[in-house]
Amino acid sequence: MNASSHPAPETHAHRYSAVIAGGSGTRLWPFSRRSRPKQLIPVAGGLSLLELAWHRVDGTIPETQRVVCATESFRAPIRAALANLTDENFLGEPMGRDTLAAVGLVASVLAARDPRAIVAILTADHIIEPADVFRARLHDAFRVVESDRTKIATFGIAPTHAATGYGYIERGAAIDAGSNAYAVARFHEKPDRARAEQYLAQGHFAWNSGMFVFAAATMCDAIARHDPTCAAGLAEIAAAYDTPTRDATFARVYPTLPKRSIDVAVMEPEAARGSVCVLPLEGLVWLDVGSWTSFAETVAADDAGNRSNAHWCDLGSSGMTVISDDPSHLVATVGCADLVIVHSKDATLVCPRGEVERVKALAERVPEEWR
Figure 1 (cartoon, rainbow, N blue to C red):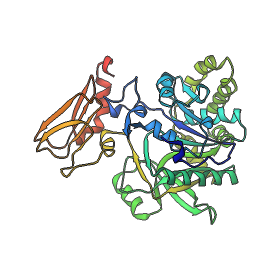
Figure 2: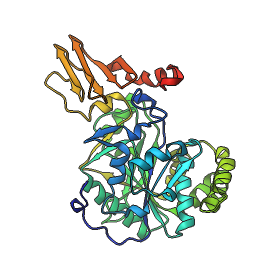
Figure 3: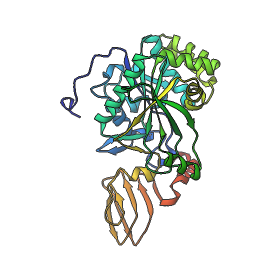
Figure 4: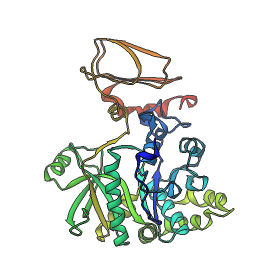
């Protein structure tokens, strides 16, 4: 990536970004393994989801003010993938404790380092294009929070179909004339098909992106308001984080934190208090790469609906997804339809396209040496 392709960063000394790169990604087995999480799988132009998320804020957030929160066991491969990520800016969880703990850890550590910090929480699961449009919306969200530090901003994805796999945000009134931000009337859990179709028809619902912008101190206060036990543990970790007692404190306290999602624990009750606003991410392509079906969408389809990034020889197949990370291996098929074939150097997956959601259960049954 050429630095000259991005505008010079604006001077915003208290703006930070944090990529949350948790999750095992077992739906993308056999590419996603314990030694290589799904965030490090190449998906677009040879870049991984993590690299795409890191560079999505180029020209907006200095690299010295970007952090990554992920499982400690992934510190080495993540730092190898992101050459300019410093050791102190990798926040390594001893184990996954869901998004309340991860977002709270970021907020608590950055608030301790910079009491005026405003943080953008980004995900490492998505392809978002074009990046310059996203940067403009991110800048808008920073401006909203900088003008009112009690606000927590989130981003809503314009729904393209009646999806049942995403949470929804119900949009309320505009918070002012010039910010393109709206009050959040309510967060809605993943709906059934009929309710999803209602949301789509009503036009003021958006998919929940899982990305936020907030003042770090404000998020710490919100967690303390709704889960004081979690807040106390996070405060203890933050106080020790940049000291020699960090590892011992982390190992003792982090496993005791409640395993809850940030949406349920904080965002829903804060929306009821009127603290949350949503900025629509319009004019963007947004793809949640969470299964082999969505991974296939990163590859162009041919006239028969086949998608492949592999060396693949075929006679008469249609609707195929053929993926490989081994350039020396040839996949050959005859007369197949609607199959997913994923080849890696030591494991191969074959399943009907309609069964890809069962890959997670399969990965849990795979012998330990291939997990």
